[in-house]
Each structure stands twice: as structure tokens, then as C-alpha cells.
Image 1 (cartoon, helix red, strand yellow):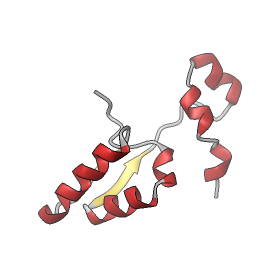
Image 2 (cartoon, helix red, strand yellow; image 1 turned 180 degrees about the vertical axis):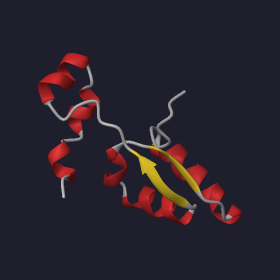
Image 3 (cartoon, rainbow, N blue to C red; image 1 turned 45 degrees about the horizontal axis):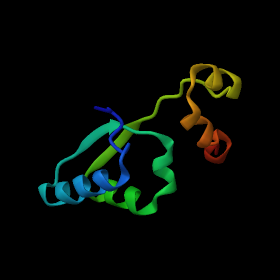
Length: 82
């Protein structure tokens, strides 16, 4: 089980659609790749999401390689810096 609510985007979208009629508010953990899916982001907001906790093991590519966190290398941290 993964505590990253969007580890499977399609399953997350189904969950968010199911939450919309319940009008609840919620917070979870997620990864930055959620920003690459506008539909996911919209459904998240509509379903009552108030925010996400996003963790970074490191922003140093050598450290990420050393930890075997290749998925984090793909997110290209620089794309999200603003």
C-alpha cells in the first residue's frame, strides 16, 4: 500500500469522482507528478482537497541515484520551481 494518493492516477480520479457528492474536505500526501495531469488536479479540487504534503528525499541527482530513487529523477525538479 502506498500513502501517495495519486500513485495510480486513474484509480485516484475514480476516487475523487466518488468523493465529489459527499462534499467533504481532505488532505493527503502526493508526488509532484500530479502537476502533469490537469484533469487529476481539477478532480482533486472538486472532491474537496485542501492540500497535499509533498516530500523530497533530495534535490541532488547524485543522492537520488545513490538511493535508487529513479522515479524522482524523472520529475525534473527544475520544472516545478517557481
